[in-house]
Image (cartoon, rainbow, N blue to C red; front, top):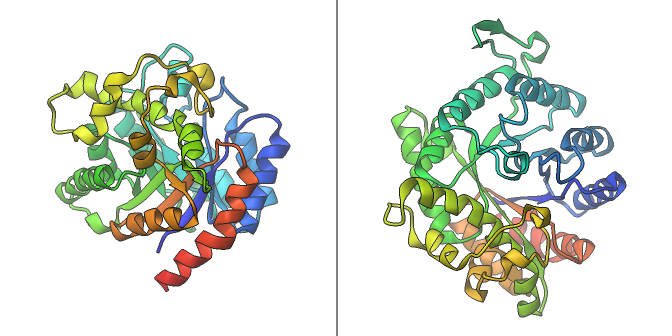
Length: 337
């Protein structure tokens, strides 16, 4: 059965962030997520602390942080602390770093460093002893409690291999069923090779969702999202080439891309999204009237998606949360039961 989450930008003022998260909790959402890009917006950790202390049921965390701008032992200790403060509601999403790294002139974290960091963070934040930089480390106060899951954001074979070997689930930033199934096949194959149960690897899909009869307006409101995803696709093409095993459904559309401006990262109306076609907008997001949104979510559920996370970076945020709380979440959860 699908669980539902919402990602709210850590935009100032912090009161707006908290207002939307509380509203999401009231409308039956299970998770509250935020970005971690400390130059573009407010720092995410104080905002997560607010969620730990001022929400009751919402699980929460970064979607996503990275082990480059955040020193890995600090991340582990911070999440262990948030978990303790909230009665066991912290969840950690992590990737190699996009906007947080590029804006300060750094590239995404190298794969070997990324894998070592993720493995260490997962153990340390859950109270298990680790060896790091030649030192034996342990958060003794984090022992013997409900574990904090670690979810890895990935698109390409190497990063999906890390997810399969280490993660509790894969974060996929798009809602195209064909691409989702390919991504999960790669991660689960890596899980099998590592001696893990591939069926325990969760699938978390993130995308904007606009519930409206104005489909063209919804497309225009969400073109920024495939443009954002194109940053990762360009990296894949650079590493693997255009004729690699990566599906053309993921790589073909970026040929029309002209530029990307991180000052408008995840912003509705961003000029860098103008190359995104209606077809790509439909495939990558969950948009349309209530029936269309339900149908898309049922399709995602049918292919094994465990969690749908709305990127709430469009106008009408309250209306989207209300539509999900009234017409979508109860309907899908009732149908699953």
